[in-house]
Image 1 (cartoon, rainbow, N blue to C red):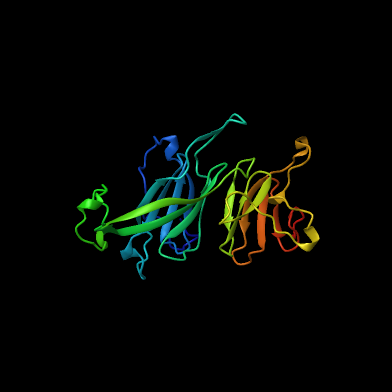
Image 2: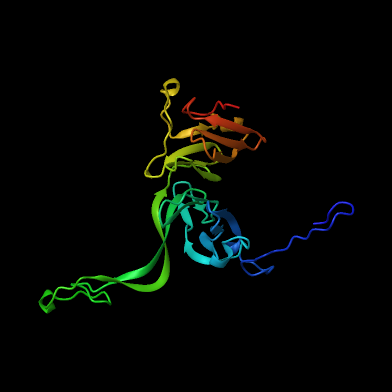
Length: 280
C-alpha cells in the first residue's frame, strides 16, 4: 500500500497461504465460509463440498512479541451431504453457508454449521489416551469367553497419538422454507438465531425439534416459531428479503437484521415476540 505524498511506502504481504495457488480449482473446493473462534486460536473454513477444515495456531506463534498468525491443519470432517427434498423436487446443496463458534466452556470446542436447510452442532475434542485391560474384551475388540477368565483386571489408560474427533451433537432441521443465509449465537450461550430470506427463527441449543418465540404480555397472542416474519400474504407483493441477521454481542435481547432494500432493523425481543415492528 502506497503512502500519501512523501510518506514512507507500506507494503502488505501474505504471511501464510493454505491450499494450492492454482487457477484450476474444483467447485467443491471453493471456500464458502470462514470463522475464527473467540480466542483466535482456531480458524474454521467451510467449502461448497460440505467439508469443514479447522486450522490451529502453532504454539510457538501464540506468545508476544511474535504472535504471527501461522496455522496448521487441526481437523477435517464432512459436515453436510447433498440431499433431495422429494416433496418439493428440490436438490439441497451441501455447501456450507455459515460457521459460528460457541464460547469454550471445557476442553472441547463446539461450533454450528449450516447449509441451505439444516443446522448442525459439532463437538471438536482431543483424545490422547485409550483404555486397555478390559476383563471381557481383548485389545483387538473380540469378546472373551467368561470361562477363560482367571483373574480380575483393572482397566488402565495408556498414551496414544493425539486424535482429534468431530462428532455431531445436534441436528436442527425442517424449520426453514427458504435458504438459510445467517446464524448467530446469543450472548446467553443458550440460544441462537437463524435467518432465511423471509424469516428469523430463535433456537435453544438443547432442542432440535422446534424453534421458539419469546412471549411477552403485549404479544401473548403470538405463539409461532419465528421472531421475524416478513412473508406477505400474497407473494406477488414481496418487495424485500432478509439478507443477514446478528445478535448483539452483549445484550441477549437485542438483534439486528438487514434486507435487500439496504435497511438495517434493530429489534428488542422484550418489546414483542414477533419483531416485525423494529425498535429503530
